[in-house]
Length: 270
Length: 335
Image (tube, rainbow over all chains, first blue to last red; front, top):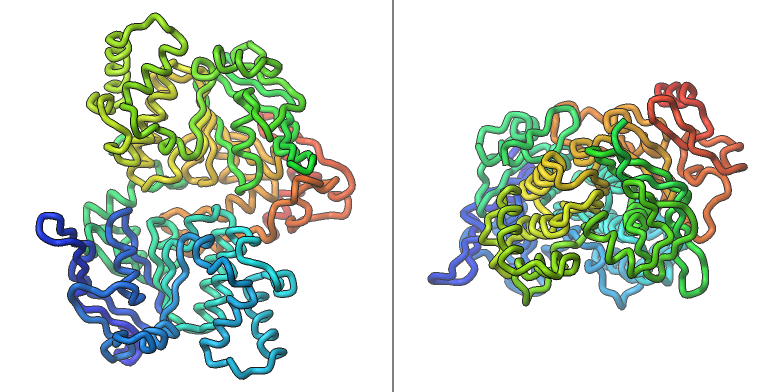
């Protein structure tokens, strides 16, 4: 078990309720979550299980109805805009749709410059900034010289997603939340993106949270897997334990439904 | 020898862009699907999978244009036919096509039964509504879809149910070939399984005679189809039985593709995923030699010189590479 000192993030009894009375929907229901330094976890669930609502709460985009969030041992305080900005230096996200993740009016230089400024590099000389930016781009196999003076929509989906990783490379957050980072790109580019994320994790020692419905991906990348159903974690534990030896019927069904190549895919149990 | 349901000989189709450039997205593709068999088409985005699916219908609308080649469905050549004739006598009865976002194509103001009436009356105007209802009802029940669906509007159905309804509507005239282009990519795993089960039932009960299944998800393709064809930059680069194509691919591109499979099975975490660097070539001016040369690990100078033919092996396999089967296997063993 990891040391208490390495505890980066802790959520206790996190709950989100939308609506009230008869129309009440409990999207996230009393979830406890502990994240340690350098850990990769996956939250797996079907559509409507509350994965994204949980992600939004962790990011501080929506307020939880109930429950507390502790960050670096202290209670998270994002009551003012300034505090929020401070918090977002430590937690960053990659979203599902790379096409809508960027401000369409900002050139790519600005996207990357913003990250340098956020890390307190506003006063750096121009040459230094360019060096940092090209370093970030070469980390994700992009050429900075080709990207200057371009707008995000001039890139392909895979390139945009890689630029997103270049941002993370510059920002070096403590926690990275990846919300379905590979569901919009095809299977071949998926390996590249995952490889880059894992390399970045090894270099910076950040904690990565994958939110996905792809069980194969969750199994491949993560140390711990949390299976989510109707706003609750029905099963969690180490990846090998949960995926290869599931206890809960829900998890068993979920894993059964994924097409496999070594085992027979049983079509009779629908 | 079983009946050949669909045979395509050297089909070439092109897109004409607004700058009058020709983009050959399907380049001399030949394939054959026998009765009761299914063929899977794999490949990256932008490799011409969906264009091939569109071209197979013989129904072209700008910017897609027919260039050369033949499409023969159950002995009948449809490649030179007029669009109107194609619509009257080919679509629906001979070929059914399920596009990627099929479930969003349902008109929200119509009930499901209305779509079915439309389809059937277009081909047989003398059928009464009562007859059509009985027919649709029994057809839906054999497929395991509740008959209440017929009286519902599309918004009342869930995503998986909508997709299955669309498939049922498209095959209600019992076509000889069903072309399914990513029929399950927008669905979660459970609904995906239901859709696949339904497609398999359709095949087994003989409602459709053969199927072409397009997806980039290889584990799915492996489980659904008998044969797999890998496309790259508009050309076929590998063809073979599903098992061979997945576990023993010959072409370096197919090899790279199979190396990126992620399945939740033991042993996966020890495997290093292989990614293919780079992007497919621009088809406006494709490379003269091997189209994969830029991204290939085993590239040789002679690869770039001449275009490479598809080498057919005796057991129905084919691959498009300058290296011999033996050399390729040796290269893969050495990593």
